[in-house]
Length: 187
Image (cartoon, rainbow, N blue to C red; front, side):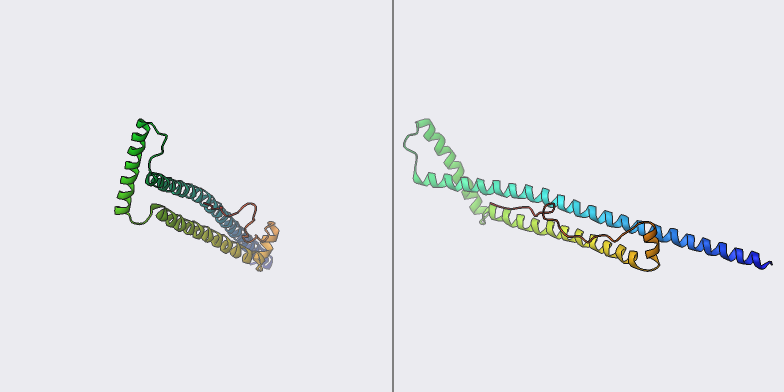
């Protein structure tokens, strides 16, 4: 066999091998980039969940706490007696409402010795913990994917392909105060 043909075959084989390596490396980097994007989307999902869940829970707890406060206020008024300036019909309506309040309190106290608002607050605390853990997990996944792709981008010979396709290191997650503030909870 002609030595020139052998050299040409070796060169063609090397070009094909390098080309396949380049394509494989480029595809691998692009797949890692998609994983980083997916993980970033996971953070957005977790932030949205935190906002939605906590806003709804806080409003629910506030509403229930308000209801209990109104109930206890009614009981206090009931214990103080009937207001003096009520008509007979208003007095009857007042007594009917107070009977309902009293029976509701008696049932609640007998069946549920702990205040329901206390359970609502405990539920709120548990949900806050769950949502925050979900968000932290999303942030850790994002940073793990960023670490993987950054390691590949700076490692030779993959760094050659990364530079050729214009891929640069990704930034690790750091919460921006203006965009990723925690939900303020106040009662």
